[in-house]
Image (cartoon, rainbow, N blue to C red; front, top):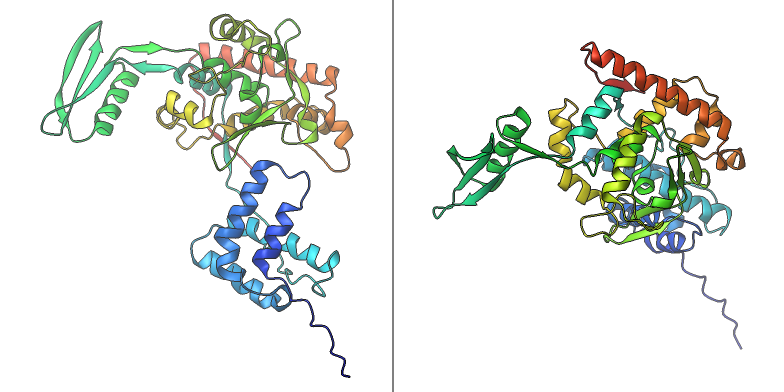
Length: 386
């Protein structure tokens, strides 16, 4: 009678183990799951997916990262992929004991170096808020020969543009340029003016501001309550959930200078029920970022006001910088911005009303000074923030 040793369990491969690792991580936000899955399929599996975990070495990881960068992947994206792989292999080494140690030991590979983002002046914020609703009056018609004819309104009368355009996009861009230059009449839709002002001066993220309800805005107390946020999955699904961090649930003061714009917005564009969305989409549902960009022609607007490439999130950066310039303490600033911190999560979770009022008042004074300077003819300029 012979005894045979049981066959050793096969060592898992990088792809399968990482897929399981992602599915078993509790508390990951939907967009984080989407990002990790995309990084795995795009940047990890094509290079390392078939390799057994035990065969991965630091030299292989170093070559993998070099190949990513050599194929045009940005340093920032390569860092994200590296950090994901490092976390997965840390679990394999320290919890599952599949490998003796983590081979991700490349100094600086997980560091990102994001580009500096612009900070707007107060005058630029108000100019942007006023411009996002402007629309030139006109229309584009396709001719029998495939070209496009542009008609526009000027001083209340419809006129035909002398040029014939090869594409519809060319004609639409010409109409836009005429409207911005005052050579064609424009209409003014102010439904997005309050959104820009509130997102900036209350330091709100897109998901937070798009999830606000009428009941979240208290104009008498001059506060806005952040208690939820929309997240858009890679599939296009919108998911309503908690804010990005534990500290995201907060009450933020609103500068008095934008209260009239918010009151006008409530009276004109928002339903009377407490649960009505503060900034609804075209059909009354949640406002998607893509829909906002299209309806406001965001790319054209920010270029026309001298801020090409400006992201909506840069408005939050601007609000954060204005708050920081008030001289408020770090904890009060973090509470206002909804930033989380491992050591002080409970402190940042609840905004300190008195301190936040001081920050809000200081921002109001900043806006007031900018208004005075604007009356004297000064122009705002972009300033980089590190």
